Image 1 (cartoon, rainbow, N blue to C red):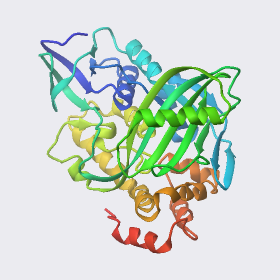
Image 2: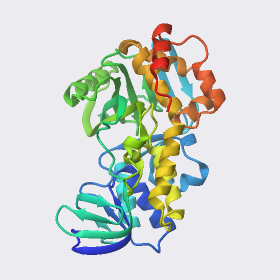
Image 3: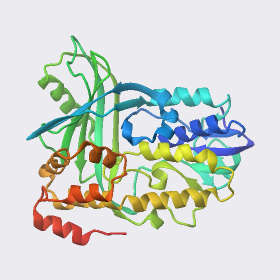
Length: 385
């Protein structure tokens, strides 16, 4: 759809990434009576592969992501210098292409506005090409590339889908292969076998800075493939990204109460503080929206939900502080190596952001895999808000 002159709708979602795309799908499915517009200047979903564990998504919400799943495995592996393990836990991947196709099919023709928002307000959007889109509610899902009000480490990655002549021999995902050389902080390689000859290889780092040299990391992916003995005949996709690992921050600075435009996704600070992943929270938020959009106080409601989610992430921010302030960069893998010796249910709840009190105690119990003095200093300096 081209930019409108002065149009009106019920709900305008600004940003067609994961959070905005899922919100559009949920509203289209559950509230077909509403005129939903999605403002996105580029490709819906961008260029991404999002993966998640079965336990990340509540059974009542799985209807939203089930049509988007393109790959499923019943188990996954992890590998560390002194520990290897197979986790018998369902693991799924969806692609940005699947999200884009679903959104295009769900929204009637003309409801996707291919333009950039130059101004976003609670009841209208001004578009870069001119024109105004008025709405009962505007939902800001644009994400954010930088978090100036937050103290962060960074998870940065480059992923490539490789075609391996004769097959790669990997049967199920390797969520962390940390047996590789530790460079630029905690480094691991992530593998998704899409079929016998196609494998997605992602080189990932828990790093102190957000700088990402895609070319250099790409060379390391090629070196990893060569070390496996793979005869790579083609590369069919590439993606790169930098995710925040939040150590500390003030929610009221991230989303001031004076900003009365509804926010979702990373724009609202709703993501896992330790992993940076946002899919489980994006699904929860999208599934809740159909029952909330008739409320005149929608912005206050979603801000309250985001603030509550921020408070629940306090434990994971503390783990981030331990990782970045207590562990030497080339020793950070020990934190994850120890974590992956724990019970499968605890690990599943951790990734879903739903750790129980007993889980938290178990994660912290025993001798820490970092120097005790540095661990105590990190805890003393941690902002417990």
